[in-house]
Length: 580
Image 1 (tube, one colour):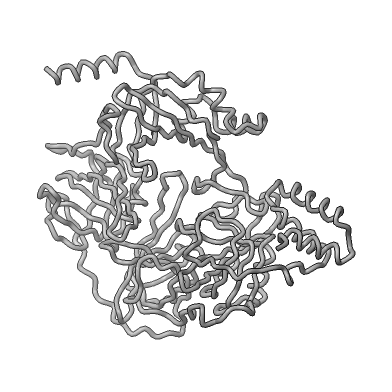
Image 2 (tube, rainbow, N blue to C red):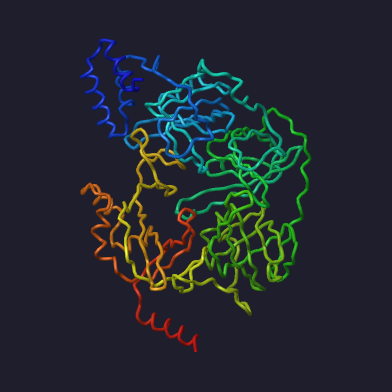
């Protein structure tokens, strides 16, 4: 059987518009213009299209065995068939050179699963003109797979891709019928990609602004929504927060295209993201009675008792632990942070989970807090703890309160970094290690990153695109490289990023990026610096992690410094005294 390239070339030559030699020349010019991003077949499609030829017609096609469940990351030239179960609103963006573009996404399903299909360029026009509708069966040609917003694979369809609507060789009975209508809150489960439901707002929290660990800023607002079957926590993110701020308790909202996660106490949460549609007070009746909330109690910390509900406290942060990641029973991951808050009467451990952990990840000693509608529990040592629940609101450093300098008989223990040898390391520790950098792995040490979320960006159709944030006008350059540390008790892989990487190489990431560009050698910065840093002894503050792939511990380096002889002498003497 002829290759697809040969079939297209034959179609072009038979049209009599240009010769085979001219066609091959134009194909090579297209590939060169696109910087090598196009395959021969993709470039041939573009040449044929410019000549007014529909080369897709009668091109050899074999019914695919590929199912949605078989889709994996980084697959190219994907051909797959599915039924459209959801069409999301079109989004406009402006490229770095000022050109405007559009993107849209849909969900398609077969009997094996569901996947998001992202459309670019002229494919978006098919949605806007109403040619693509929910319930249609479509076949995707020449799609490519990338990691989506929630870590799942998603298919992208660019210039060389094609979308065939209602292919004639498929049986509708082979594909699931799209679910229509709204589902009850009691029917909502964790990890659903697209949820349509309606309910009444029972409680609204105030908006919280926070800084993510990568330095980007975010906004979040929580609410409780109820219908006759139950209640669910609803989380509005970033741009959707503006809508939440206009809501009032008792408003009815219709949610289309929300997604769910596992929330507090393993219950599902409904999240409202940038692709979700929300209609306020639609012409839909929801028969519910808004239940009264527990009476709020404002208390001094010394008066807290176990099992209090809806308690309000205020105080000053006197110690903070590290954010801890954990795995739930269903395999999903979560985050938790704890810190000690004190007023002029006592101190108490405060535990934050999920969104609260994200919001408070940047909290520091000395910050003041107002906490509303928390609840208390008994801790592992029998002490009272304050937990931040789904109804809890937190205000960081409020201007209207004054917290006196805290003086406790016993100040809560402040988390410190312990010096350890490599042989003593355990997972999820934050430690200090003195070791020699014995090797730098010779791989590209920098990457193009999204200025908002710091994730890696890629060029799609000549435009930088972030899988989390969409089109990016201009990426920032960030360090990420690895090496091996050895302290005589063992060796361990060390991952260098950010300021720690810049300190080690004594070179900005921008300069490293420019070196790569000028030399056309991706490892040029490390090749240049290796003689200076390999064999160098450093003191590193790092987080110990476990690599599931290699089944080995690794160090994520937070900061580095050169050993101070006076400090090292004191540490050595301390160890010797302990052995006596």
